[in-house]
Image 1 (cartoon, helix red, strand yellow):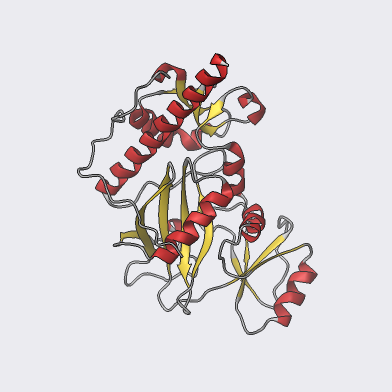
Image 2 (cartoon, rainbow, N blue to C red):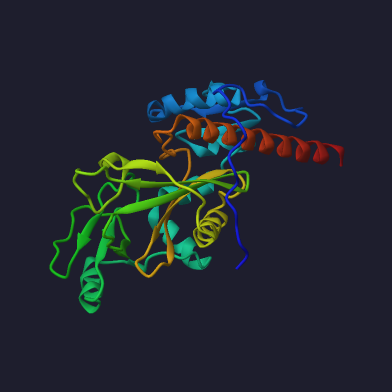
Length: 305
């Protein structure tokens, strides 16, 4: 396997502001925006303001030539306009049922996962595999909302979306989840979510449940390769996303899910490290303007022909 290296941090943290760009821009800031409109846009307002500052573009309710999409009620309004993070990639990242299928088709290493149409099939499967622990994952929740352990005698949860996602539960002596990020085809950052000492250890290691981020050193190449596969499979590799991973007791690295910004959720920026938070904003801004330049070049070539 080719050894992957996580991109190093920039030499000095940049203050949060308009991105320093090294490309000659023809697409102007007024041609771009952070697109945030509709009844659900309130949930994205703090991030919209952060992005407006770091990208140097307006927050707008109408699409422009090139858009950082956060929220619209009708994605058909985007026809004819370009977005930084593809809407299909956003949709995939928001639904763990879709992720399970994409990961399987692209050989992304994950805990053993099954999509089952009925609850009877779920109980039958769990009963036939007593040597492992299993969890039922809520397909569109964030922060591990709705996930639950499941046994052969578990009662069917009401109004659960189909198909059911049954996934191997990887029990660890010290619950922790690792995360790395990608912007413009470059992996960076390596953090872990852990519960502070003396706090309740939930089986679901989520920031919303009290876990906190810890900065780590150089990530293992196997973890980076798994993350790269997940990002390529979901169409996030060239824009922006993150990957959550576990290390199984066997030492194998497996992907839990990917995340990105837009429509349903957004990537957590509350990392407890101001330098890394600034780096994340800067990398996303650089990736946005690089994609905008590429789009402008492609548009210019199309006009010339």
